[in-house]
Image 1 (cartoon, rainbow, N blue to C red):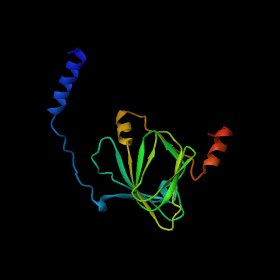
Image 2: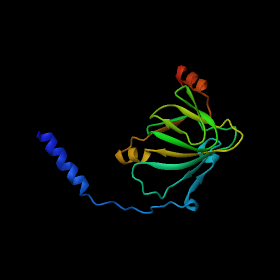
Image 3: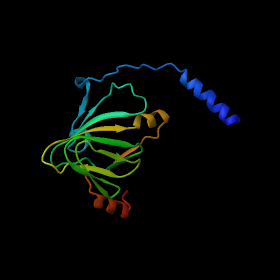
Image 4: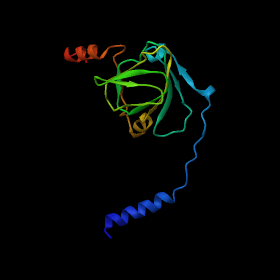
Length: 164
């Protein structure tokens, strides 16, 4: 066997013998969620944060968008997935329109401009999962940026005019 394989097998055995880390709480109760309204989110969405979650690498949140509204145009260094609990809509991700409905997952790659739209007649509810806590643990590398309620074309105009 090569030295690289020997080293790998030693690390594999050490990983197997590692005791579990049992941070608490194991369940985040609905009444402990912290809700942020439009006055904080900067758009018509409401976000519910699972702040007491002991997760070290990912953040969970609920997002609700009333009928006919959207999130803001934003980008961030972390990856995110929105699981659509209920409702229909679409997202613009780096200029590409993608349609989604209940039980779909919407992936947003790192540092891509995106905006989520609810074009249905009822509230959209999504579970957001992002690896922002992992980036926070690495150091000051987790950046977010928003241009507010701008459309994709308005964003492009800002970029072309040197405003961004």
